[in-house]
Image (tube, rainbow, N blue to C red; front, side, top):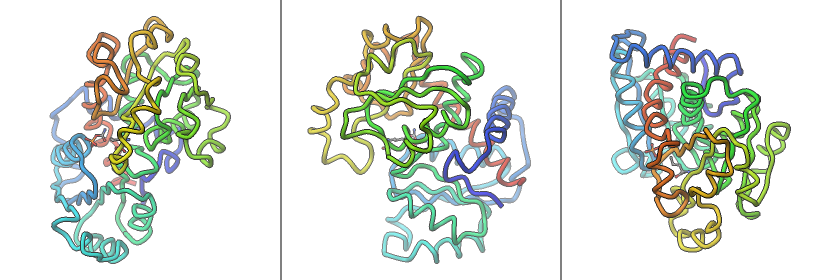
Length: 297
Ligand code: CP
Ligand code: NVA
């Protein structure tokens, strides 16, 4: 029984296998699969979601299973029932847990006490499901990501941490431009050291990159810092000038939701280099491949 809390929970070979399978599933979209026939997945979401919730719910249904959505507002999680007890109870009645939460420790505790696979659908620390879709998207457009230069611009946040793990696992260079006080986590930086570089200069990071990636400057839980962050990050907007520093055929990605005029210019996200809608769609295919892998392991 395997959990998926981080990209580091899989081997590089397994990541490549899941992405290849995601592309296969996409090519025959809608084809019935019965791998989750009669199974139930429960989505424990302590934060908002559009893409992650929909892609898991639709994906589970397409694999023959059904899903339940549990939010703190209408479960005892919101009234202080321990995660440990919730994990044990869910394990007795369902077959898979997808959890979205703030503190990463909550999803770790869920996994520690569950006897069914737990998937991290985003924590403050990382967002591994997003990266399966992102790597699939890059591969579809440009082939193998190994050896490529990818630029991360903005906040050294949860999605950035998963990009760092991907760089290490799939052996590409991630050039990360952030303000000094918003650099990624030190331990992740150390563990991915040979595949990343840190700078405060977005132009340096983007220079010659095959892909430029960004994310909101104020993720969930940081709403109160929105104004101060918009000042701190003001030089980190991915606009046409920054894209022109990247390779001529550079792609643009954003996990969404996006804030045009802040981390990205409308002309970039809505322009010809942007692959954000493929990226969003691929959440469905990549997570179906992930669930197939987890339920058959
Ligand atoms: N990218 C992503 O995880 O989107 P949601 O927050 O809408 O799930
Ligand atoms: N970094 C963002 C990602 C949302 C999908 C957040 O944590 O809110």
